[in-house]
Length: 475
Image (cartoon, rainbow, N blue to C red; front, top):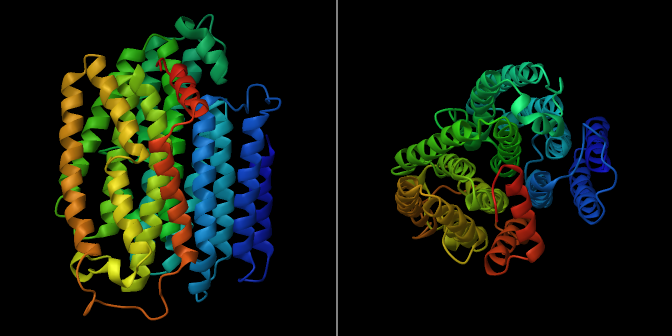
């Protein structure tokens, strides 16, 4: 179990020490392949847990698989990307990404809310310097904003964690932050402290997820970060924060505060989707558009948890789908950005002709992320929608449909403007031709999303149901 944490950590240390700029990206690929192999081994044989600290349960499996698949694709993409960016020192970038992989693995495996908080904080500290990869004023501003806003959020989450500790200190409580013991204590926990803890943890981890109105770091960070880092932030780091909220919801449900927690999640989820509508329509920067798309999908996850019941399984299914299709979009958008040298929609057109691989991938990723069939997000969003209408949340279901329709139209007008037309007269950077080195990784992610839409293996269906059951849901 420790292999998936220690192996990337060891390679990260090696990347900081290795003098060869050209050799470091290979460590990234080795770390991703080794991590994926370790995750496959863990799925086949979970081994012995470290009681109270690390254990691979169903929600952790969903997030660990998502992170591993996304990191593998990003590491493969990085091989060509970092060759094209040999003008940049990559020591911190490669080493930081490997430490990020280790931290995300700890989040997925953690059964101690204190350890989980530490790992979430490490993801903030490791990714902030990576946003500054381009070494310009805009990326510096984005890195500082990300660091300050997320650190403030994580500090509030620490207060919430302390409140949970106080809740467990009530007579009959377990006096610990071990998830299993807190859930087992259930009604013995102090409900006022549990409610206060949830509010702080929702704000704290909600900031890390990018739920509205706590999302202010996202447009700048996603807009300035390299495409592969944007993929990991939007599909990996946010999934880890989603898991943290799901862990907290487990405790709230056991303590009798499930209804209060779910209502808060439902409101924030719908608010996030509404805000994404406002900022996507008329957006003039296609990478910032992806940031608001991420706000929308974090809202969808929150709605799934908030509705509960059958929608809970849909939320965990959607976490996996979101990771895959965000990888497609950010990696393809990164290739378009390098070719044109601008993110402005009014300066980019004809990507289908100039980039015959990345252009179609960007278009297909748009259809996937907006929930068009037969890609996986269509079915996970449908499961959440069915759960909403089936559980009496008709208004929430109707709003969900309206918001997704507006976002489909808003994103469609931007994406079609980027990919269609004649690229003649648009800015062009020399030496940034399309190739399989940058197209194969997002293509593999898109294929995975398509397969999940066409055929969901029974083992995965059972996994999502088991993950949902931990937060009070059902298949």
